[in-house]
Amino acid sequence: MKPIIKWAGGKRWLLPILEKIFEPHQGIKLVEPFIGGMAVALGLNPESALLNDVNVHLINFYKQVKKGLKIPYQFKNNADFYYEMRDKFNTLISNNKYRNAEAASIFYFLIRTGYNGLCRFNSQGEFNVPFGQHRSIKYKTDFFEYKEILKNWNLMQGDFQNLELQGNEFLYADPPYDVEFTEYYAKGFTWDDQLRLAKWLSEHKGPVVASNQATKRILELYQDLKFKIFIVSAPRKIACNGDRQPALEMLALKGFKTNFMKDIRDKIKL
Ligand SMILES: C[S@@+](CC[C@H](N)C(=O)[O-])C[C@H]1O[C@@H](n2cnc3c(N)ncnc32)[C@H](O)[C@@H]1O
Image (tube, rainbow, N blue to C red; front, side, top):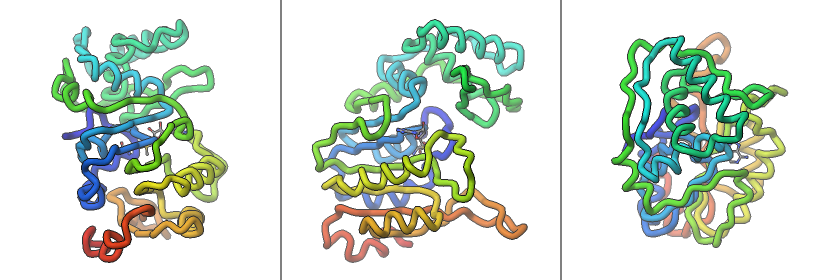
């Protein structure tokens, strides 16, 4: 199924590869510590899953969808209405009343209608994304088709390291991208967090797949931790010597059976 909402860094494009890797592990619980737009879980459709994200509003939205969220508003794609809804959402946040269906409905509207589908907060914790000026938007009024799928999946909110794992789960980790040569960590995920994550993943006994921007230091980090590394071209483009070239994405694998790894390159057709 398609993601419920558009989310920065969505990995729907990686699904053909991830499906091949996950296929022989269908019966195993899927764990995604960075669920974002849920593109991967919805694409792989595992029997059981543990899906986590640090973003409280995103997880509240999914929890409400699981409970059968119905939108109580007539949404309008216009700037005045958008800013009215944004104020309402920020009032819910400041009154600590944001873990409910109303906040989830407004969150859905803001992500659909705001600039570039971004989810961004200022230092006071207020949602501050401007109006998106999309030409037209089809708003959903319920999410019943997702309710059934989410029934067997657990949702958690918090830092990835708080997840309590058995050790045999299939782990797919898609953290915010590493951005080299910058002190600006817009998504609040620092290089120390990347180190902490790689170490945490390397200690998991079951199968692990990690994706990230293929920066030199990320490749070295995962190589040093004995992951098998693959590089794939992402659909997004980056500026390179005045040209725009496909960004390179790393896929790092570990914890798979030797037989499976032997001809993995053929299996995933890289
Ligand atoms: C690249 S996105 C994941 C995209 C997802 N794979 C998809 O297809 O939509 C990364 C996610 O990590 C979350 N995140 C950032 N820091 C985190 C942390 N310390 N623990 C858990 N999640 C975190 C962000 O909120 C964001 O949703």
